[in-house]
Amino acid sequence: MTDPIEEERIKRAFQKKDWPEIKVSDSWATFKIMAEFVEGFEKMSKIGPCVSIFGSARTKQDHPYYLMAEEIARKLVNAGFGVITGGGPGIMEAGNKGAFEAGGKSVGLGIELPFEQFFNRYIDRDKHINFDYFFVRKVMFVKYAQGFIAMPGGFGTLDELFESLTLIQTHKVAHFPVVLVGTEFWGGLIDWIKQVMCEREKNVSPDDLFLFKLVDTADDAVNYILDYYADMSIRPNF
Image (cartoon, rainbow, N blue to C red; front, side, top):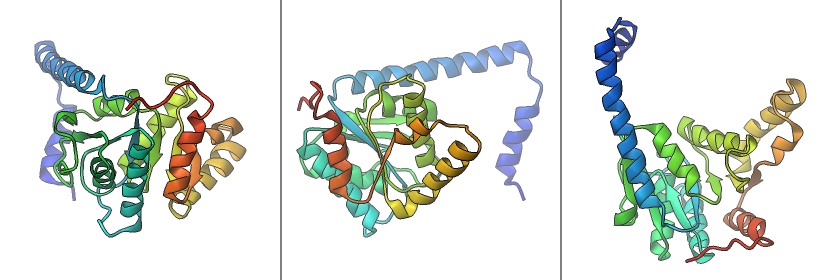
């Protein structure tokens, strides 16, 4: 049965509204969206080279993926990169923890949710931003990162991963390195993309399968990003 609050939200979506009501509501939403972009741009514009780490908020601190995310973040910092996460618990906490304890830049892009989400304690105080809108938050994830690492996660992780891949595929952003960590977790999805999306339905091209790299260790994840930039003049600057 539908939750009463959700049912009321659905009913409101079908209600006919007059133009003044729409204009007032949308105008206020526009200002709020603009404010979130401005705050994000101001705080993120000078952070230097970073890697965004995506992953589940539900991963426990003793889980191997948590420990691996922490190790990846630490190695990224030692290589000169900062770390951007969603700022919450689970994999996000692990990424911030690894970066923070290694002395690197630790960014947390939080989101207002009715459950699960709270800021972890390993975020730099001046790099702690909270959002109401997912789409504004995703702009910050992509705009200020020079690489993306997807740890195992849920719908939110898939959303962030495919947002990044779509922007790279359509050349809306540069072809930054994208790493998926965990063959056991991601293998089935990748097989489906290859066999169904690519080979059977022709919805993506064979070249699109090279937009990401699947690895199983922290060293392989970090080394892929470092090797990707090895022959370029771009280098981490802190």
